Image 1: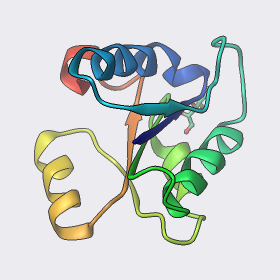
Image 2: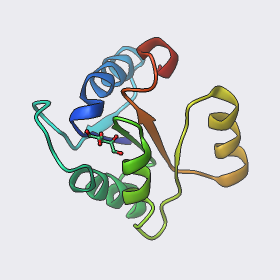
Image 3: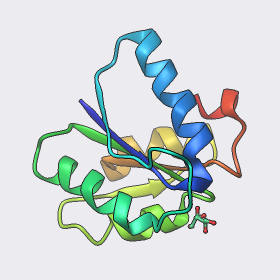
Amino acid sequence: MIAIGCDHGGYDLAKKIMEHLDEIGTEYKYFGTFDGKSVDYPDIAYPVAKSVANGESERGILVCGTGIGMSIAANKVKGIRAAVCTDHFSTKFTRLHNDTNVLCLGGRVLGDAFAL
Ligand code: RB5
């Protein structure tokens, strides 16, 4: 199970990611935002991070405008190692070398195809 959440800055990319997960048959739980209206990113980051930290979800994906706010908020939860990733090398090696469990993406930074 993957926990997913976004603020308004990440709403469009998060929807694309969930469409992709539907296509490949990967289970996820969505924590909002549900309508693309302005929200405070910690209000989304916290429940996603808790879901990973308490074992309900194996991994998390958080999307905001840059990915940075989400990573700052998620990393305040004990047991969470969240990283903003903007390239394939860092994405691969933050899993291998840092055991990150929450991927943070910037919906205003990355193209949809690149992010997927
Ligand atoms: C929202 O405008 C934007 O500040 C937020 O999505 C994020 O980029 C914060 O880190």
